[in-house]
Length: 319
Image (cartoon, rainbow, N blue to C red; front, side):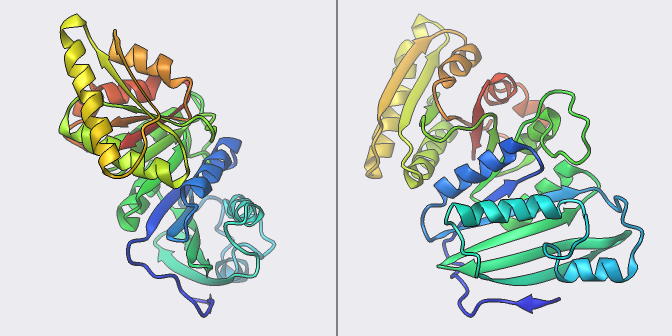
């Protein structure tokens, strides 16, 4: 392990940790910009993750691989993911989230059957830590889910590519995004044309998980000064009072935390269709997952999954 770390390491207690999964797509960098906005305080750390397939054209081994491990961003080899991570780092510098002179600590971990293995560079300064991670995994979704489990992140951000995306280097196909959102036990933002200035539409249905998701996202939205709006859908006239009650309970719980609700709306109709249509006007559609997390048969039948599948813009599954 090669080290060149700064003298001052940020405190790890109560850190707000954001995982941003990136590839070559511009959408992934929009996700990174949104992460910077969410992580505007000095209590926030960001990890940039690029997942590559096992032994993807790296059998040359020897000195070049060893040099790449020691300095994976500066060494002049065209290794999968290094240019993508460097672009992400440069964007963080451009946005003022990190400084170019921050010290870096290089970390290597062997992976059986792959000469390059897992490689990280950790930068720290100004009370923050930035980690660039080049991970090898049998599949992209497995790598993301493994990192989610290891890292205990508050929010994971990845984008959803177009249906039928066959690019092996992309981690953002529709199917991969759905798998991560389905199986991860934490909060996931699936980014589609993610814009920063239109606020969060928090959808509530009166359940305990819906209420907790509303409170959690209200706190996340407050970090980036994003206005929050509450939304509920009654399937018919008989459910209208319950929908209004769900909004009122969520509003009271959010305001109890000292946060502001900028708008509220209740409609009658099909929940999925109404949420997808109303959500067009916001940066994020926010929903809670089903009561049983990690079992696809339950999640796929939920409103959250169907909205995630059909939405035209970004969706947060809040847990």
